[in-house]
Amino acid sequence: MSNGTTNKGRPGQPVRTHEESLDLLAAVAVEVGLGLKRGQELLMTAPIDALPLARRITEHAYRAGAALVTTLFTDEEATLMRYRYAPDESFDHAAKWLYDGMGAAFKSGSARLAIAGGNPGLLSKQDPEKVGRANRAVSQAYRPALELITRHAINWTIVASATPAWAAALFPGETAETALEKLWALIFSTTRIDRDDPVSAWRAHDANLQKRAALLNEKRYAALQYRAPGTDFRLGLADDHLWLGGGTTAGNGIYCIPNMPTEEVFTTPHKDRAEGTVTATKPLSYQGTMIEGIRVRFEKGRIVEAQASKGEEVLRKLIDTDDGAGRLGEVALVPHSSPIASSGQVFLHTLFDENAASHIALGQAYSSCLREGDKLTPEELAARGANTSLIHVDWMIGSEKLDIDGISAQGTAEPLMRQGEWA
Image (cartoon, rainbow, N blue to C red; front, side, top):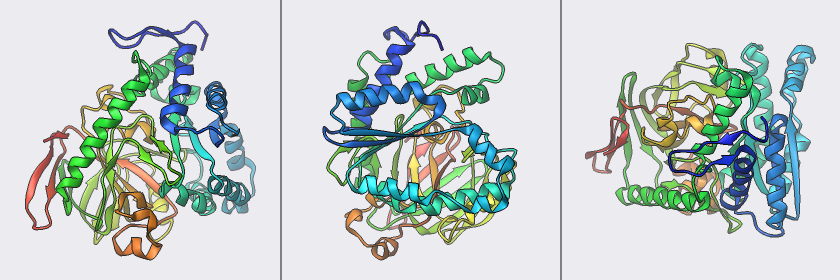
């Protein structure tokens, strides 16, 4: 994209060049998303096509006083070479030394930033068996580092960069340049970069999400009942659960907003209290494979039937990753009128699509969504209903046709959402 490309913004919003908007996204990611502190190290991961944004983030991190910024880049062509040429036994291996190093960095106080933007269908034509094995190997190797993130022991955030492959997947009828421009415009809009003062806009949005979470915590629902076309589902909530939304104070005392964008309030469901059928409302891009038309049935918290119109074998291998992969670790509520849903665009990326629709997540629970959760042992977390797994995968079940009731401990139901909006 040329330096002269402009971000036209929303009506009444400032007009900025692409480079100005990109620089502002990087600044907001460091200041608001990470809350990076002077003297802190930063560990960043990014696709190689996101190099311009990664460099801007690096600059702003050093300006904020970062002691060191270390970036690990991924190359999708190199990933495909593995599937084309590697021996079969390769797919049971992961760079454990690398993930051990990431865990060591987090334990020593490093912040974590991920730039998303990979090709959502990169591995769709590859052998699902090999994809499943490779994903499992990575999940096992990354587990110690992931636990520090799910416990919110460190400050971390995820932002997105438009990339040619992702843009082409979203806008197949456009030229490469136009597709990239359209995707960048959506990213800048949904992350509030097109506002006159993005930092103030984020502070206000964060306060609104915190207020919604506080209201849900006052309600103390024991369960949620979902009804929509293809969905009739009751989900119990974990004992002593906490609703969170927007930012959080990490275990290191630093306030961060983990996802940019974010529109959700979320908590921990009880791993043994899911009953009924759930149908996805958006495709799921999982580790380079598109999974569409997901429909599952739960009994006593576990998936007992699973099907998909596309990518079903990968879905089944995902569920079979370990004992907790077929149970739920997160439930999140998002109004259908969220800016991402209102854009009318399916992003084919969980960072965005999960903030366009209410969703659930298979796998690992966030211990921070339980009272005193970060102080509990794994056994105590499990006793309260928190799930444990090598994976944490969100998929979308919300729409303008979804009704949700909150169920009290006494069994009384009251409207929580109607036609996808807060009641």
